[in-house]
Length: 405
View 1 (cartoon, helix red, strand yellow):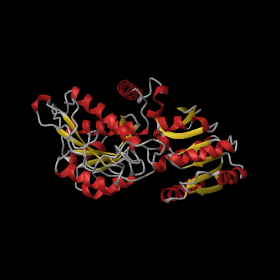
View 2 (cartoon, rainbow, N blue to C red):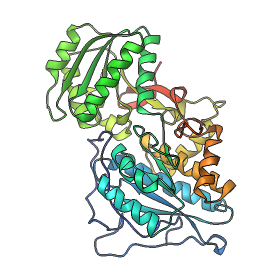
View 3 (tube, rainbow, N blue to C red):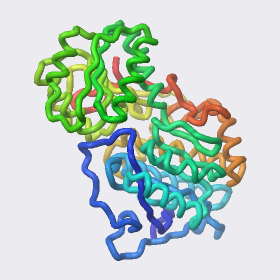
View 4 (cartoon, helix red, strand yellow):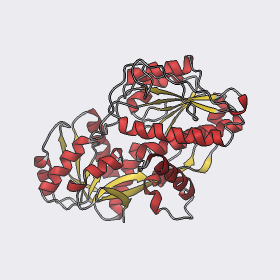
């Protein structure tokens, strides 16, 4: 029997802020098949027994498979650690925490199925997951009356009082990039974006931010995410003599862009979307990375370089060391969002119990709470709690992340 209490059901579902291609997804299970269980075998259904009290259930609706599987693995691994830690410390006021997990397969419709089962059958006190914005939007109507639900998507904004969202938002990350460029007098900006729906939204937002930030847009090009060569677009941008090229694309298409960048011998600073913050994926690009390859991030990605007097130093050092010891690899963008969400919910429940309205009120009252991803400042109008102040710039050197100078 597992000692950390996964529930026995698994559902399915999810779509996209952007895919993290280049990271192979595991074989898809049969719909409804428990995660990690061979086909036809029943799922283990461990029930924590701390003090013999009924467990408090939190539903984890995450992408174990599908286009977002690279992050799904980090969500699952982190959740294991957190549930174990909380229960080892006595649970929630003596009641064990039980995680009931559903694999949504990165599909919105199956996210709905999973959320319905978690709420109706498992009667969870809260839900966490939905790393893709479409999945978060899909289940929002189901939780308009509770339970409290924590989306792990940086592109999703809360639609009502019971919804919270993780990390620094995409608009704030984009604004951070502009401010960073202006401070370094990289004022001539060129943009490169995919021509799909998400890319068009990004292009519009980035163009607006360039103007608002006092920068000059010298060129903007788009490409099909399935293109195998973008040197024509890069050549046109190069000829406009920009100080920096910003490319808002995630996953495999980024590799195509960097290959062209390398072929043209470009040495301009290159800024990519934080959706690419996967250690394995960045390592795979080491041979074609630009001389100055930059990605915005949160402090958990720079945990080794935090000063000991940084309020986020201890929580990050403890978390990352435990993750490394258990899984023998670094954790990227996904893990920190799950870690913070689970601890925020668990600590709120320790104070006010499992009533959704009381949990919301408790979270909204938090000010200056140090998490892995940032310093949380919630309010009734801000259910993300993080912003520009929590963003940092990372540089990729030899396929590895380090704080940018």
